[in-house]
Image (cartoon, rainbow, N blue to C red):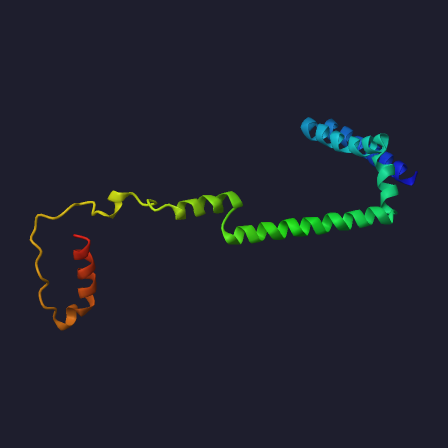
Length: 146
């Protein structure tokens, strides 16, 4: 009974604020305030407020909320583990199928894209002391035909 009275008072106050807002020619805001202020009285009229009041003092309802909380924690834990592993079950199955294939890489992909060069392969000149740092880089570039 008290909850219904409070909800009615909140709705009346909200509608009063909406009227004042409309008087100031802010019609969009006034309509929005009126919509929010009608929610509490609508909840009272549908009986949800009475149901909530009965639920708040029911031990069975609180046990149900506890079970829902445990279910939520379990759900979020599995989502976190799934993200750490790298995707959903469907993505892991697709990756396993691709790994099982022997022709996962196209046969021509291993061939150099530029083809054999027309220049004859030459041996690198003996490196001096200052060129020791660049000899590894030169070898890598020559290996790739650059």
